[in-house]
Length: 86
Image (cartoon, rainbow, N blue to C red):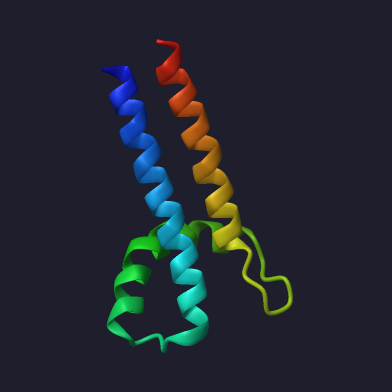
């Protein structure tokens, strides 16, 4: 039972990381008003905005997606390892 929950958590975390990466890459190619970009921004921005308030821009580079990916990965590893140990 716990292994199934761990696999679902891992899948959702990996899917979310993929969406964050895709949103970051698409921001270079699509206008901010493109429907795909709007949808992805609605998913990702609630998680990026608190990080953006804390971490300043480095020149023209926004590091908040990288920080979010690291946080999700660490949280995923902690939860999955905790569930596997049960």
